[in-house]
Image (tube, rainbow, N blue to C red):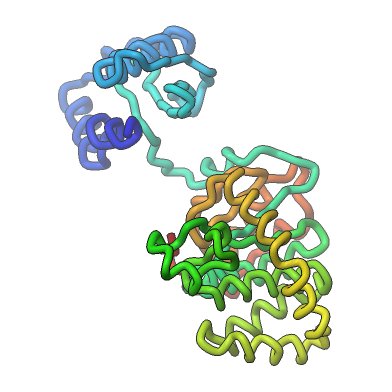
Length: 317
């Protein structure tokens, strides 16, 4: 609710930003600009948020977590009852932005923490069209970075879906409705099969995804899934046994990851536990993943031109 209030009432739109800049130029307002210290700007930001929040909730707890200089602005992290709010404030403490508009798109890559090897998790639903688009778009990235990083497949698991308990038998693995999928039980079973293939035939996994996305639908997946598996010489009996014997444990692990990272939508890509929100193209995915390395692998310099259109921008949630 706080974020909604802040976004609606206090985030400057592009049009207002442009208007403010034009008025400042016309009135020579920039000549009166008086920068302040980072700490002083952060204090002003905290005072602003405190006044805003307490007007709505007098019992709220507001604290300044940290502040840092950010390309001519001061970026502040303010905690409001456990919710982190990022505020970008001009260095004269007169204008605040809930989100900066990045002219230099490379700055968006700064948000990913660095690691010796980037940790990459892609959450999809096996029959979400947007998730399938993301999988297909990430295939060239897998090929380019195969020796440098492992892109881990994971799946979006809901509980108590749909809300009508009499319908849950068509969407959920269990009678309690703990493990469900948006597009039905057939999708959920395929999620588990794909995780079994990843567990037992990791080297064939992404090729399998490419083939199953092309050859099979949610309506015929119960019989069709074996066709690409046979093509890749994957032991279908072993995968069927995994589905039967390990399915519940696999789903419990997936649901725990979903809860840990508050996953709701397919696709969701996490890089070092930070959600990707860039261009859904092979090059966009590759650049973001490479930004998660302390020292980028040589393969990161490779330009991926195979994707012309890129993945659709929507999601299943």
